Image (tube, rainbow, N blue to C red; front, side, top):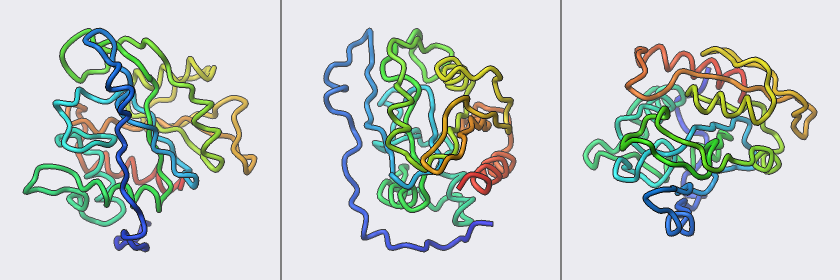
Length: 222
């Protein structure tokens, strides 16, 4: 069970700009390049890989899971601090970026996506309407995460992309994981691909059940 109070001082972390300015500049109406730099704490044991961020008009913060109506940060707030609004600035209708970054640094939670360039086939945030132009070099990410134990996905497209890229013969069902062939961390432990339910409110599962699913994963992998 995770403790509900922080075990670290937020002040020791400097919150930098996570925007990938060069990618934003070269993006066009046809092709979007990833607007964020990978967030890869060296101590990370869990790497969340989504498909691609939503359009910036939907963001409330310049970081991963930026849509205010996505519940990812509420789920982590509930799990680690017993308060789903721990990372929520309700008055400003945004997430608390500095608190999120400090939390992820301390706990060892990394983030990026399975695509570095995409085409949007429709004007919405659905993974179903994303065409991958340039897949992410996942092996390059893992080289920067020597203690990573699990790649975590929360959507079908990201899961399928990783299975294809890393030659994983079995696509994991939600709330299960499968070993990633020939992929080991610095400690000699084989990495797994762990699939969770989406934190999007469009995914038909109660918030409390999502919290429990994520809690089990974190307790196993962190």
